[in-house]
Length: 102
Image 1 (tube, rainbow, N blue to C red):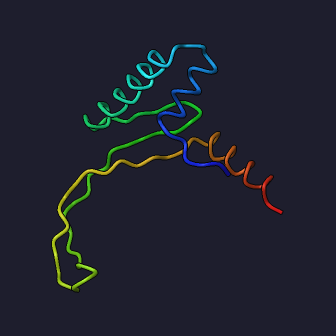
Image 2 (image 1 turned 45 degrees about the vertical axis):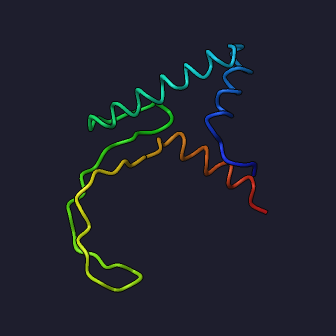
Image 3 (image 1 turned 90 degrees about the horizontal axis):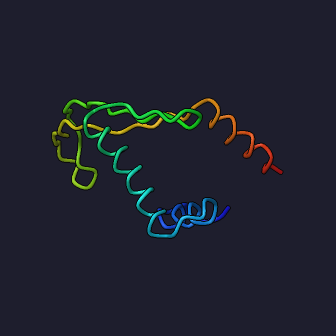
């Protein structure tokens, strides 16, 4: 397995596959990522057919412990982003995993 897929690698893929200059490929990717981010900040769902769905969940505050000291602490309320792959993506990943198994 090769390394992590990065933003620069995605820009290169857009450049290579579509033929856009690096500057335009970067702008396209930045626009897409910014729109996804803005929708999630608004608490909206982002769904890409055949890939998956990102949702924002509210987490209530709750008691916890500092793992270093054992002291009780209050974990503050926050929002978290979750990703649920589509059935198509999940099947594709599992199929490729099965083909790699010895």
